[in-house]
Length: 174
Image 1: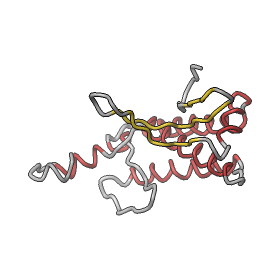
Image 2: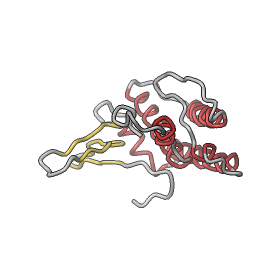
Image 3: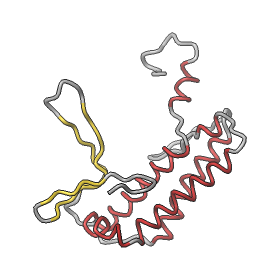
Image 4: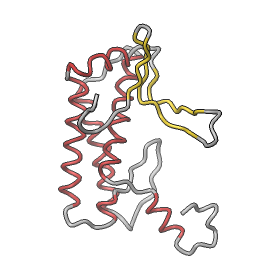
């Protein structure tokens, strides 16, 4: 599906399109990460964002994905830092794509609200909003026989301990 290395592949455009798609869970999880990152970065600048702004921004992102995906295969050119994403439920023409995406969106918005309101997340909000915390930073482990990279969702020092957080859209496991 790599357009640069698959020059002679007759289906490379179709393969590249399919490779660029995400299912509803992956996409809403990605939007959750973006939303929390946006919120914590705003705290670092001493400009807290209201929950309503976060909810509306996240909903617009996902609704843009849905509208874009419904246009498949007659896609229009999109630009920007975070262009809409093609959702597999629409590409594969699931008969209940609208309902599945509605449920995923509701779950995402509930998770954003919980992060913003629930006491269980207070330390993450407070310490993640500190100017010295690390938010959505790529990390590389060197000296291993293979390449290891990942993304740190949130990390901060709490006394003598470094706390590393990995956001999940679902039930927390501690």
